[in-house]
Image 1 (cartoon, helix red, strand yellow):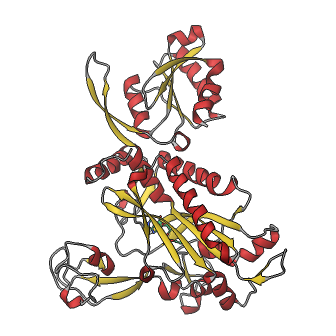
Image 2 (tube, rainbow, N blue to C red):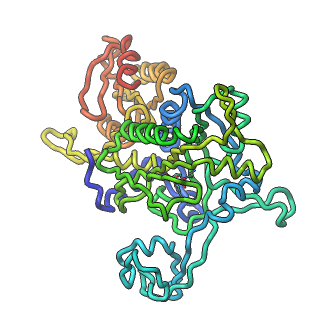
Image 3 (tube, protein in one colour):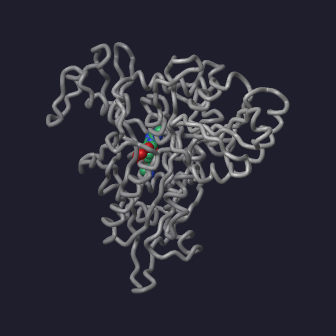
Length: 461
Ligand code: GAP
């Protein structure tokens, strides 16, 4: 079910919860922070890792036609000439002469608050357009390249210039032939990778939605040209299924077919999966048909032969490519937004209720799968609980906690999305059974210690 997300309140609550529980918080905070950089704490890092693993299973390891790779963050700079990033990976930038605020020109055009109102059909006369914040005059539009530049080696001159990769695709293209031959792959097949990308965004913001350092999970699916439509449909459906597995409501997703004039320089068709964030409908993922643009361009710039020879017909051609591309942090954000729930729940006081905050995360990606909670800090309970926690750690991600009241510990686990809490009480010593509490229903069940692993496995995997 889609939740009412059209309030920034939800965003504030989620950001506060993430900080309080050490899931995600501002980076370098003891030095006053670094604009729009975020660190992932213990639960955030586990959540991210579980998403990576689930993605790999869904898109790569459960299939016969997919391979995984890892390429460098820094590549030969000629790669970025061939990919078009040096020439085309720019955003249009304007500054307000009065309040000095910096804007993306295309974002201003989309904003209804800008003065005067725009008509997308009319050519843009930038002299007529004013700062949406203070109404001040804007500078002329400049194109700003988003790639982070650095120098390789000790000399900081032009010949030593390198770039941090702005996307991962390039590695899959430059290594295409080697991987195809080493792994004896026939078309169609794909190469996937997960890793960091860097973009010097003009207007980062909205928590982890747009940052300058982020991770992409993407794959390049190499095909015969005439297969592109069916490959496109297949990955489209797999992306939809992926979002469903993350409990992202269908109603919160809008498919946006990118119009011809707005397509990236490499794309013949792109659909964006947009999400209904509390701050508006914006891009979540992209699916693009990149034709043979990349392999042809890398062949031209490098001089390498990147043709493929069909083993059945002997035909030689440059493969075409369909690319599903998914940001990891945006995945974390929509997963958290979809999971965040507030509900009235009974307290320890008879007849009283208060608001329970629960992250109803899909069980397979919850940072902690099982919490082990002795009812009291008495030695006889702690001993059993610690041994049990260590046993369970061999199969699940487990947290042991013996501080505070049991009610507070349950609520803490609810807030980080732990699906099952296992409580050891004084009866456990005698009857060798524990109480298992379900995060979503709050129902408690007595389970024999000998059956516990199977009980949890059945529900978690
Ligand atoms: N190879 C294609 C490609 O890189 P993209 O749409 O530019 O496509 C891929 O980026 C995905 O990375 C996006 O769909 C989005 O999920 C995520 N993404 C893009 N820019 C981002 C940013 N500044 N911060 C966080 N995630 C971002």
